[in-house]
Image (cartoon, rainbow, N blue to C red; front, side, top):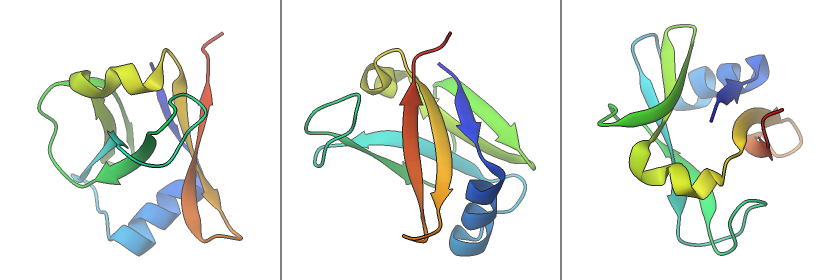
Length: 98
């Protein structure tokens, strides 16, 4: 599993969440909503240090990751984090690796 953060999503995280180099962003499943990879679950994020990261990427000194205990949610898909200008929020896309 790989995590991809668009430049515009990175800017959103810096501006709206106040992230700076050295910050950690965890992506995790939430028990409500729906996603293309899991019914009855959606994806959320929190600002916290990793315990047992299974996938991570560092962009501008900020570490974005998912924990080993949450890998089931992604169902083998890579995570693409993008910025939705109309909604002024980040959105998630899931793609199977090639």
